[in-house]
Length: 350
Image (tube, rainbow, N blue to C red):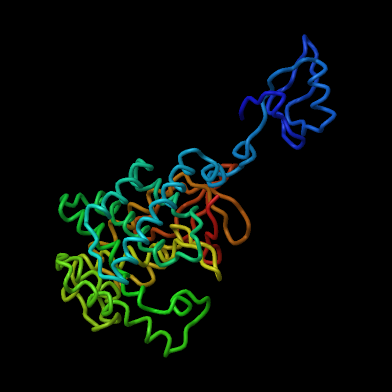
């Protein structure tokens, strides 16, 4: 709520508190002001009233977050830094202009200053609506932010932390040489189109050949679609053949892809993402993946979720062996263990 001078009032505003004159209530809290109401306030010489803001109408955690001052700062800085990041990458892709590592780390640091911990970043990313014309750059910028969180959660050295963040900025650079409409077309690609998309790791690796970037970063670019079971590309590498930085980026890339809204679907919730990782766990380095999944799942405790039957619950307890199927409780303090109800799915965060 905010105090507003009478002269700035407009029809349609909603009062946040009763308006009193002497002992009399002129208008009750919740009154939607009309022009006649405003004229009456003038006659009684009421100079200031309290009106409701958008956030006051929010009923869920995520609605309140979207209207919060802190999220708006993140959203604003994200747009500003996305523009800076795009310019740096396009200059490099079109003219070979080298990108100082410091320039990318300044982008990261400016955004990192807007959230206090990784759990908040996950909330912010779930609520961030990307510009559909900037999906490639948005995806990599968010991956760099998540890379920084993962580095903090795993207590990486400062040097490795920067290498992982820079890997997040660079790993999809090969996509800048591919047709945008193929990369981001809704629906399933033809085999020929998918074969084109699968070239981007090799293209990106070739683009970085003379940059002097570390082997960690170049390996992450080349191998981020390789999988531990050999099912990835471009070389069907498996296990320890895959750089550890590429193994981290494989997890980060997959998480950001699922956490981002697309024209054909909404963003998946963190627990839905955990479920997909659990189904495909053989593709990822378990020693890296499981601790990161535990961090993400634990951050959901206390969150409100909506199920596919439209019921709303709070996440009460996370199962160590089935992170995506927690115990829920409702307003009546009834509990629901999702492990015992395969027909129920979390579809939205509230």
